[in-house]
Length: 437
Image (cartoon, rainbow, N blue to C red; front, side, top):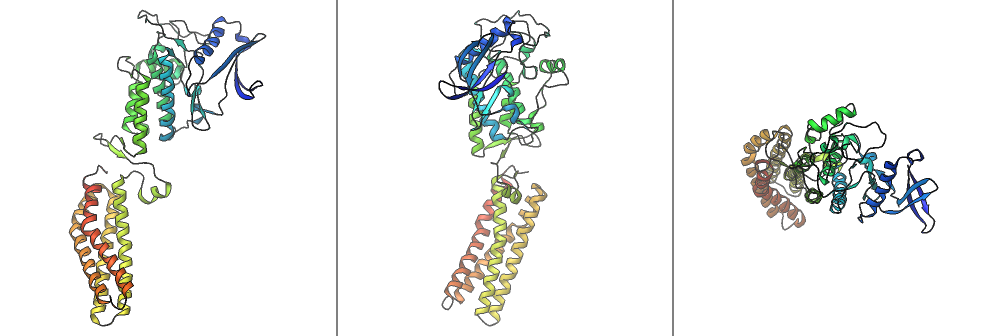
């Protein structure tokens, strides 16, 4: 049992872990209790709980350790898992803590969300080294495989099953000696749960769960989380391999891979498997809710900019028609009226084509490409026409209405340049060269 207490000498909050009175008579449990304190106190790392002291009061043994204000990872993981940003932030710290423990020759042997504290500032603390065991320099390949005992406390002798069943490695489930790669398998199970909200091997009962760990493969996390980056799915897969030789070998390597993944995520360069199982497609950075509603969260960044370009095209055409109407008001004659209606016609057609392409984008990538090829020459033609009309109107009223002339010239030229050069370039980037759809 763990209690919050106050260190009266230093005036700080501490956590007190007490060995239950009914377990005091068990030499094995008492030994593991002391072993936890010794193992954790030997590890000076920001992501491993700090042990202050191990003491006895009468017949009660307890450990005084760092108090962490926060929640366990188990409490934070919901039914659908954690947000990707939090998953990467926490998993990098967990992997770093494991790398430090493994470098000191210590295997945790009971890594699970309940033994991972997340402080209020987002920092992670690895706790409960009660099953930790210094790694032997030699490994006995003849270790016996024993059945699970009925004792409440897990055993540490070889041939017994130790740890929490849902997060055990295959070698733990068989009661064999373990090394750092066993923790890596457990880390893969934790990472799987962080991503999906499910335990990879959990079944109806303990025996079925052990059988799944030994003989079954978990459901690919990408099937449960469609937008899961392919790189993250591969890291999980490498950690959960049953073959020790093919499993990820070092926690430090996993930490580096996760750090690179986090950097790519911050830059919006992650990838996920395409629906057809082909090449990976880019995953954009997470957008604010309003932007997702306007432009969609699944679209690639060039396509979002392409949509903005076409929406802006409609708005600029509306502004140009208004300016042409103002031009017609300050001039007279049939040619003035003809220029206004010509501008109205060109802008209406151009806006209509832009709206059609925006609708085509919602229908599918192939349909959009077909419509874009069909309308491409017409966009350039009407863009050029609007630019020419703007030049004529601006020159007509340049002397008497300088500001209006300047506005007409500016808007008309922008419409022309966008239609002649910017739009074709955006079409290539967002429609033809991208993996959208």
